[in-house]
Length: 79
Image (tube, rainbow, N blue to C red; front, side, top):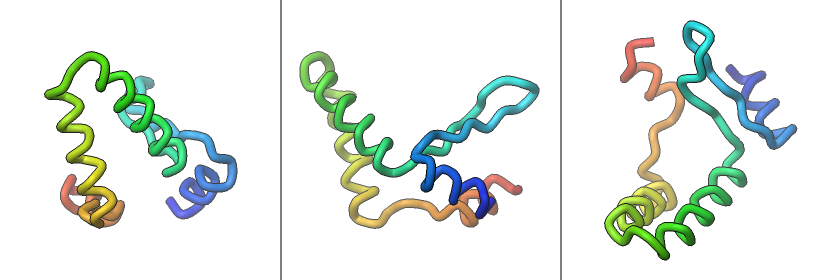
């Protein structure tokens, strides 16, 4: 896992996790995550106030340190 995280950080590109040949999740550099959230917020600002509120709340939680480390997430998922 450390190698994958280093590759994501160094190459600044997402890493897709597949199951049965289908993408089920993605790991991406935090810079890209922030860019995507900003673009989404801009778009939602024009269209959907309710969804925008959820995105902003998630971003505040992340910035406040209320995120789950990968190891804990794996334990919660039983992996």
